[in-house]
Amino acid sequence: MKKTKSAGLPVLSALFAALIFVVTAYLFHIPTPATGGYIHLGDAFLYLAASVLPAPYAVAAGGIGEALSDVASGSAAYALPTLLIKSAMALCFASSAKTIVSKRNVFACVAAGGICIAGYYLVEVFLLGSFLAPVAEIPGNLVQASASAVIYILLGRAFDRLKLKDRLSGLVKQQ
Image (cartoon, rainbow, N blue to C red):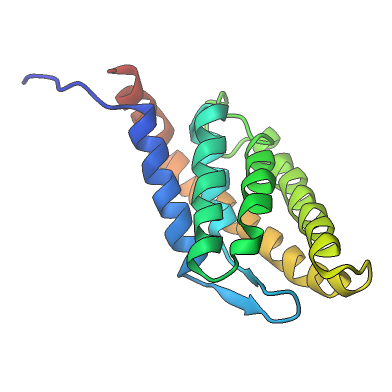
């Protein structure tokens, strides 16, 4: 059987960006009227991308996918901050582990959640001109970070049982 050449990392990154966009913008998308933001589960897929892809590709997939979801869902004012915050969140994870879910990546969920909560608090302070009003969003951001971490761990463990990371690595190495 003839082996075909794989497009590798750029294609995988684009697929992750599209998945992150769809999950963030359309699935489990819960608006928060107080600040014009929304709660979503796209971060779980950002974490998966960051656990599988090398850092530059994970940053691109997560940042672009989440920022585009802001534009598509009427929260364009958040697009640039989202690009920066989600990119920083992706940097918490390591693609070098043999598995998707590793001790380091579980701790990365906590760090990424902290970046998300602190980052959006500061953005909302700037956008709303108040240090008090954005406090109302912290519980929602905490729920989002926690739920995304749980989904990431559950999906990651299932993918680890299927040896998905090894299979994806094989595709990328064929390049």
